[in-house]
Amino acid sequence: MLGRKQTNILVIKTDGLAAFVAAEPAFDAIRKAHPDAKISLLTNQGLQRIARASPFFDQVAVMPNLSNVEARKELVKQLKSAKFEAVYDMAADEVGKKLFNSMGVFRPKWHVAASAPRKKGKSSSSICLPDIGKLLSSAGLDEPTRLPDLSWAFEARKDSANMKPSWYGISTPFGLMLPGVNPEKRWPASCYAGFATIMARSGFMPVLAGPRELHSFGDEIAQEAPQLVDLTGKTDHLQLAALSREATFFVSDDAEEMHLVVSTGCEGVLVADAKSALKAPDGRHVVTLRAGDDLGAVEPLFAWRTLSNMGLVLSEEDGPKSALSR
Image (cartoon, rainbow, N blue to C red):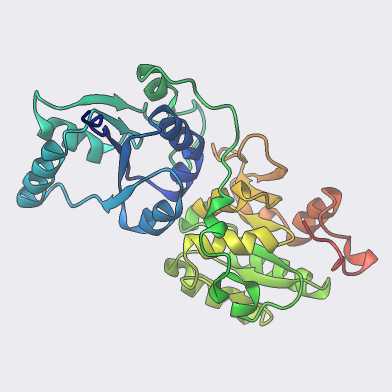
């Protein structure tokens, strides 16, 4: 008796880290809906490593530049030859639209996420989170109710030396500082430096993490806070997930990395201006501190006292709370 032919499924996720994290429960739902299928993911270069570590995809490839005619033709040829039964476009961006149009009338069933809704009277965040409810509904799948859980991100390489804080010279209790790349939505360097100084006085090592674009911003902080451990550009997403698992808390602003850190269970504070649509992920122990138009109005000591009120640290008057661990 001939075996049943394997089903091929394609998932497209070519947006940012925050959107990838938010979609994690949906990846799981698609995997469970197609338990015996070969599921391929098309993503961007920055998400390739963490996607390959996930339990949801059998194959991960980087989306080529579709503005290049030859690259687009070659990709369409490969996709047609794979004979995908269904495509889940979870990015809802121009990349997916170009690919959809290029596939022609003989394309497979195409499920598309809705673009991120815009809130009236709110300035947009740098982070775009598409609405995947419509996509799942069109495929006959229920929208997951659980929160994103990227515990698998550090399980993938948990025994590697470079997944441990000691690899970076971190040997004491520590907290993570996660600034965003957009300077207009970022807590000022002077505030991060002041916060780092309070951390050091209280017995915590201040650790700065983020993409390499923040390296000069890290230099600004280090000038005022020499205790800083600057890891900008030195950790991939899997390493950051491992660090966040052992961090006592975090402080962040409009940063993609905040969503990854929160998904591992790390708790902390988020700094945003009063008009920003930025908010803490639902269902998490994260407090949003809002200023007016000037993010610098949120003082470092106020952020520290907020962490104290959350039970994550002691106040400066009480001394270090190094015994705390998650």
